[in-house]
Image (cartoon, rainbow, N blue to C red; front, side, top):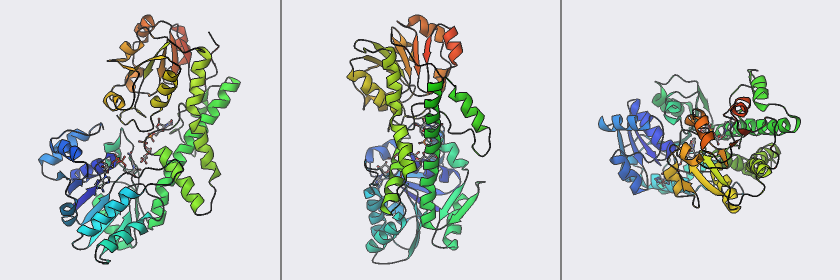
Length: 436
Ligand code: NAD
Ligand code: UGA
């Protein structure tokens, strides 16, 4: 099939590439010329494991192309995916201006029947909005359908997630339209759920909201564990063994960041309010999440009440491992708090340093975790990159001014670190530091 993807970001680029890999002809469009130029030189605009190899192969075999020419991409396609960004303002109101602009341009470019698929995460009712805009700009024609096909990939494992989805959701006006879209996915072995457009739009938010609730729940349990001296990791294991609860998304720590959970939960609260429902539960989920950084910073302050002139090695900058995405990364908040109190901050991230340099100043960017920790008063671990689990901590300890670790993601074993001679503080595992 000939498909067109509008918006070549994390979702659009991965979606287009994976559909090309499945044998379709995919044209990815973006309005940012620099991004398209890069991709046409086979340079990846984002770090995503496995992506470059797939892009290279499919470009070479002619199934994947990149352009800024939306009109010709739309005209040559039967199915058009909208994958543009949908940021949320602080009050949770989704900014749909990019979706609106894409719909307008699609309408102006239409040259016959198309299926227009909304893959961006959008509030319920946006499918109707897209339908109205396209029809206004397409000579009031109704020779098209609008479908909701939300995306569930995670950054850092996006290619694998897109090739092995755990479900495919199609919200369509008729079964016939849904089946046509499903043909695109036919070679993937995944449960397919066909529903109406509104339900599909809500499924996306409900999924992210449920996962965020699990994270805030375990973080609230971590707070209790700290008060009574229990171990949240054992509690998470103990409850996660119940298949009705499950092990996933019970990692306590600094809370959820990234481009999706915070914005999507705010948006769902806002939309619910708009329709007359006060989603108190999700407001609490957000509140618990928002106080994670202050709580962790409080731990640092308990140990080092005066931060002026103290040196901190911040390990991990991206919002999660295996990505260079810095959107709503906890590192930014922690670093701001440290530098506001005149601490010296040395940072390292295996992949996100170039992206971080555009957002963070007043810190020293180091070439390795070892360099960052050298002469530091404490290590502050923010992102649980695999390589941080494998560090030679003996070497690090010997190079530090004081052997103190604040582990925001519980990647190390407390008793082993203490045996090694570290003062080790983590989340929800009893010990709270005493002032030095
Ligand atoms: P992104 O910011 O990485 O990419 C969006 C791209 O769309 C940008 O390159 C932008 O230039 C382009 N764009 C905007 N308006 C355009 C227009 N009119 N014409 C052409 N290009 C245009 O965003 P993303 O992370 O890929 O997210 C896209 C959507 O998918 C959002 O709604 C997001 O919530 C949702 N989503 C994201 C993820 C994820 O992991 N990032 C996962 C699932 C769903
Ligand atoms: C998330 C969802 O997992 C995807 O299914 C969804 O498609 C995507 O949002 C989206 O809608 O954009 P992503 O944001 O890439 O994917 O990353 P996650 O792995 O879900 O992590 C989100 C945040 O939660 C990270 O900051 C992570 O550190 C945090 N987290 C995750 C925890 O604090 N504890 C956990 O147990 C799991």
